[in-house]
Image 1 (cartoon, chains in turn blue, green):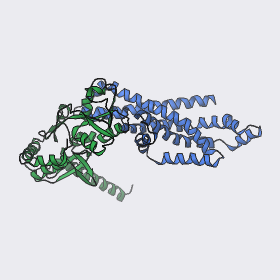
Image 2 (spheres, each protein chain N blue to C red):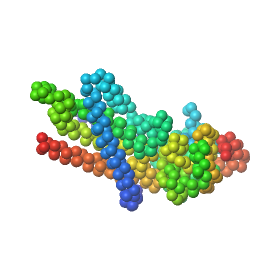
Image 3 (spheres, one colour):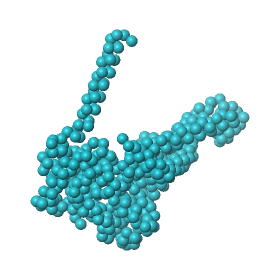
Image 4 (cartoon, each protein chain N blue to C red):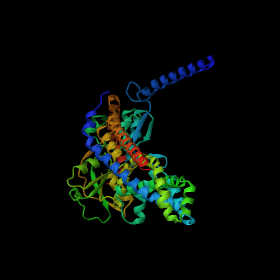
Length: 219
Length: 260
């Protein structure tokens, strides 16, 4: 069996552009997911029944359906309703963000609920309002606790974002496929692509560990 | 560990090795099990059936020009034909992995492909055309694609032809041709570059939405792909093809499926 590693070396810049797309897609989507997910978690925990129900329904839909279906729906289905087209980048970002928000919402909710009741009661007895308690007592502690699961979500999204290749986004996976089917050297190319994914996920988990240590010292 | 348990484990291990050996012995032979002519006892065919009028699925049935042609070839070789639906991008790897014996999938004979698989004699002359939204007048010739987004099927001659056109803003590569044309309909792309016969078929299916513009701007030939190292099978297919062309069967198939 002869291996053509030269194809991998000469195409490395080509694959790197795909890796950059994957990284951008993941970072933007998870960031948007954190913002939207926090809002959803607060809605879910609010005393307003309708708000809580809307958030619960959202989470059910996006956690209970395949991400692939969501991506295809946003890219092919949504423009039919909106009346204007979405680029594959826009559709990919939107679908991944909406999906991530559902998972992040549950992470944030569990973080908030993990803060002991006694602290809230103590804060209430000092005369703090509900908003103040959330801002100064509950959320800072909650966010510290959810760093590891958020890191998890980041890594999961890094891998799942490969699904956007179906709507012609040239992420790392798509570029690997293109290169593979153009050179017919699947073993070498797909091995290179999987190693690149591994490097990316390792880098993210290292980064998350670093943040975690920093925050612990600060506390 | 008790004696009985050890015995059992031993027996299980031996059984596993035997089954493994049997499978290892069976698998390669399944593809090569052949008569003296090099023709397998069953002709296993790989195709990407998303390409009317050449290959598509209706109900549970494979239909189209290529499908009828390969069945006719099977009939003349005297072997049953089993068709498998495979994603375009996985067709050649699947052939080389031994998942099937031949590919017929409106596949253009290209140098890069011929380096990894063998091709039969050409059986169809095709060319690339542009498909645009109905009423689009600014795109008439390939040069008009300058600054435009073009949708193609991944790693097809449509993609390769588009890459030769100067100044195209972006080439979006979709898994199938219908998806590329869908991108044009929903305005994610300005034009699709695909095979003429397929373009005509799609324009007939969606007359209000897309139209074919211009003449084909490439000339290419479809071939049936066979794994390297099976010259007898290639020859047998070529003989059957020649017969089919000579006795009028080819023209009948052409008239049935192809409208240009």
